[in-house]
Length: 357
Image (cartoon, rainbow, N blue to C red):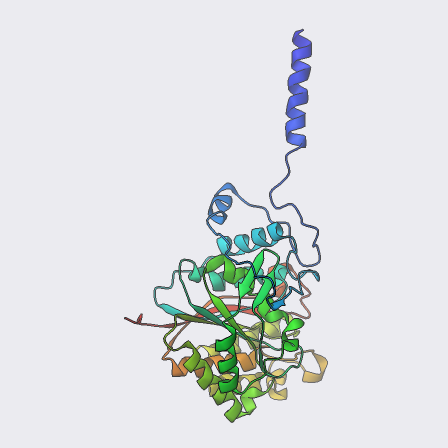
């Protein structure tokens, strides 16, 4: 009898441990996702991050998620929410007491840039904004365009766009397109939305893909900036600049280029930023670092350079004089990617030193 009881006890123990599944079970989206393992303390913190979204009414014009299926982030809602909670929970950034009016956040596949994005968004926890303007990098070659949708759909829910009437007035004043086609295959806005919904509640977005070379068209650029300044007037607003940094140079060159570019960005001076861009992409800069331009793939200092130019001009109009770099890394640092060709990522905040009364 004693032997039988012992066998039952052993069987019970083996059954229990054999059926325990580790936290962070892979969700099948192995192309860009990762096996997230949590400590007890992290699991407690992550539950405090609740995701906000709404349900689009029937008949709404909805932009469906495009990049979950390609593995840029976990497609199953539970995997997506778990990964974003993890990135925000693990972000080590100091609290920003000043009035945050803008952030710079990357938009690569989460396994590469998610940890950096978490640093950009963590200071927003507990804050509230009426409208979030997303100034997006442009990967499709579309002209500057605001997304004429009612909602952006994510796997966990829908994110509302500003009201149609307000959007139409803004489009007219800004002199830009509202062609939805510019947004269908653009990932730089879509990848910001889970982080926004993890940190904020009750907001609407103004999603803008910023066209290439608008920085060279002063009248068009200034018209957009003026329209944005008028649009956010009287509102509690946040400007999100969705941009990665250097694209495809070797690790050491990427680190040098990104450091130089970010030094120029912290001045909040458009001319200095554009001068840094020109210098870093020159033959002389490459030679100074012991390489020939034609021997390396180095396509840009920031894929959202035009979005950054628009943002800096807007910040100057709005009295923004504070900037803080929260995190820098590249694809080799974060995911052990190819050291010969990396992409840089930065998280930063833009703020007004004195909170408005």
